[in-house]
Image (cartoon, rainbow, N blue to C red; front, side, top):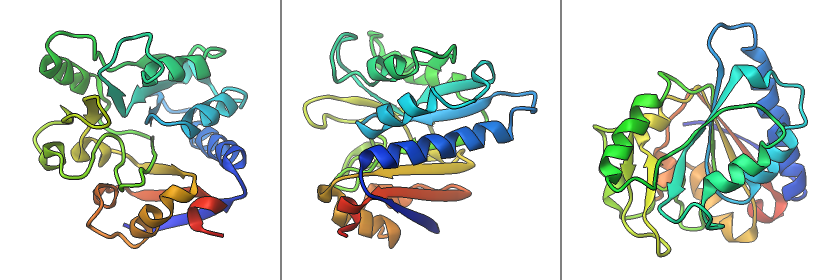
Length: 220
């Protein structure tokens, strides 16, 4: 997949540019009958992006936010992506379709979430880990081989299991927006841009891929 790279001085500038890009994608479909569909990963930079996006002139009543992944932790944990996602969008009326990681039957929760996904996403946000993971598609995890489901569970990673969109679900994206910051991402970013198959992130496919990175990540 071909990636377009844009470089920014720091994470705040990166988040602001991402918010503007997402707002532009939303405005392009505002006259369409169906809503703007935006799937968001966990991390730090996405909350800054959504904070800035909430200030943009977007038809929030014509948008739906989905989760790309979620940790199986208690609802009040600071590790819970949904907690930060909702806080970032608190000033908007946009509905968030949440992954139900509180269900006692997580496999059934995966199936229910898959049933709620749209036929395609207008935009999917992804981050990149130092180990080359994206969403919760982590190296050497059996979830990387899942091709018959849109949503699945990862094994333990950094002490928690995760619910995540799989590669087939991410392939429903018309546009992928990567937000990558920090010097610890330098090697993984280089591999992503080279489509190095040794990292999970390189196996994501979409019609277009825009990589927004800060100078620390690109090494300049």
